[in-house]
Length: 126
Image (tube, rainbow, N blue to C red):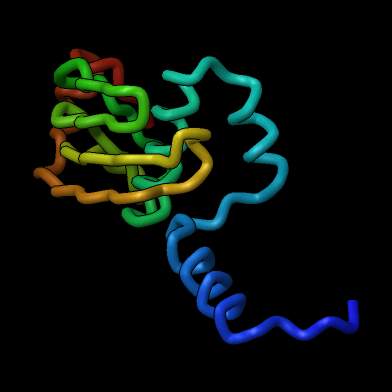
């Protein structure tokens, strides 16, 4: 394409790049998310974001309480995450785009480590 983008086009391009999620997801992940029901798309996209930000290998949003959801937002105050073989409590608030592929906002609070002796009670695994 030999056409140049004007200044307004560059501003729009910059805003679009900034408005995308902090953890870019690949085409395979996008394809898998699109196959899910919308509520599951929301949960999976937010869990992926939490995993990226916490450098975790697993996030479960419902271990201690059921998340509260709208069409594009989830408050998961009873979540957990696993990192380096240990489980930790987690609380997060996540808002996605309507297609659930981009993160609009994400905030979280890490909690204490969960004792290994309690893992079976909460269905956690190594």
